[in-house]
Length: 359
Image 1 (cartoon, rainbow, N blue to C red):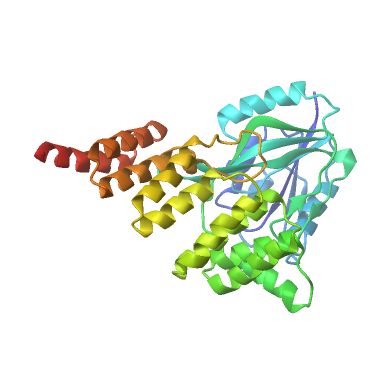
Image 2: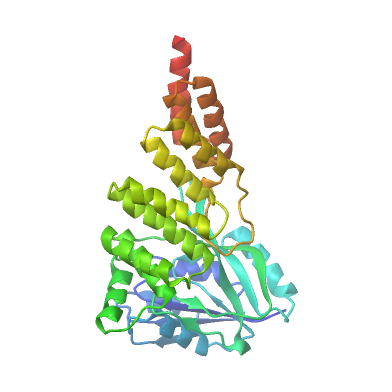
């Protein structure tokens, strides 16, 4: 059986920290808390679970804080979580099994990170993250924000998920301000940093600036393929908000330079043509999206709705616009197979029933 140090960096997390620690305490042999300046009851709550609580002066760099937390660990493997993460019961059972059975030749265990959910609690966005790491290899966090671990060695994917259950909304411009301070000091962003800065600009509705940095990232030709495709997707959405259809289409088609069509790109192309009332073209792209197999072991972002629910419900819309109610009903029902008792599917059922009852 391996031993595990659980490491967290925290600040003003009194609303969520106990939920996190309670969910993870049964697999942690020690808990390391690094507090970056709480002025609420966070540290008092943490003290119920551990006496290894350390203060760290916040310096606008998540990596240095996380590396400091790792430096305090003493067990064979390190598990890191955020304060608003939890390990659900089913995943905890699998985690306990992993703890007893893990081959110590394994250096890194990747786990799914479920971060997006619909109003029924279904996971809509997930991706793999490096979660359990051999301490002796001294892996280091990099990048001041949207930090990542520079990993290598014997890496495996597991069937364990970590669930992100955000209780309160972070300051929407926090990450953006960190990037701006970096640029103000005259420092150059890495290609990865450029991509994530562009994302933050997009989230903050600064579309022209986002376009500028997305192009800069793609022009560098140094991006990971998944980030390149995601950059094209975000670029298309920026142009959509600017009502620049020509460049929206060019951004989507550019994604094909990096790999085969992805479901989210196909759906965005479907949306492009649906908005242009070119329903046959929209149908082509939405149908293509339904034929794309969801990646099982990819470390990229997986937006689950694009692999079934979304293209099918949009096909229902397209066929309704074309007056083909039978096909619209068929695809609406297919969308319902991916999300049972979905509000949009149920609304469409009532809508189509009224039309069919009149005919």
